[in-house]
Image 1 (cartoon, helix red, strand yellow):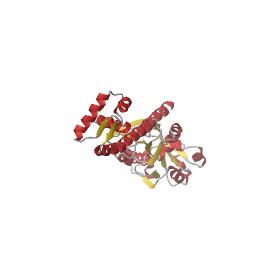
Image 2 (cartoon, rainbow, N blue to C red):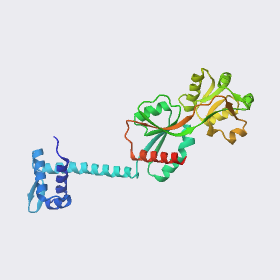
Image 3 (cartoon, helix red, strand yellow):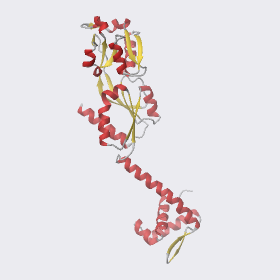
Image 4 (cartoon, helix red, strand yellow):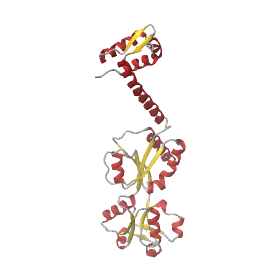
Length: 299
């Protein structure tokens, strides 16, 4: 059975007003149109829904059953419309973002701060992500977008927008002073111990990619889960490490950590925004993307 929504809307208003005249006024319809609509609905359902008299209309038992169900249905419709309006006005809603430690600390924090000031009623769900699990979660609808650093590996059906360049450098502690003050080739580093981050992270993937490019099996002494821990281990002379340049500051220099001047240029890395090409984009995500663009233009 496929009955016009307009039929139900007219019946509901007549039953609510208990008057065809008043219902016609509120619906901006002539009375004959309202009466004909009720008759059409009764024909479709095969029963009488209301009786008419000089005192107005009175619902039959079938009419009361229909009216009770329509009360619930229209309440749900009105609630849905109100909720959608609130989401479009950003009075409610959520955005689910996947990010790495690198992108969160270096790039996302000031943007998140600005977004939360603009839209305090939007709930933000921030999840640690690697390129591999970000792709999976974007396609599964568990993330609205991800902000990750390259290298990203192979991703499929993912929209990627380049946001910012991220320069990587090689650092070492005072134990490896023979590498300081001169040009060092990547081939010279094959016997040195390296500290890196977990598989799937941009730091871990960079070392793997350099090894493949130069045919070197780097001596990875340890894989760690955070950048502060990696820097602490370099400071303790436990190995060399590739890190984003912004992590190398006065604190590290004062601790005796130095930048190794390489002969070869480390390939430029970038921070990307990733989204599933098959996903529907909600209003909160669109506004966050606008803020990302504003941040790019300021840079």
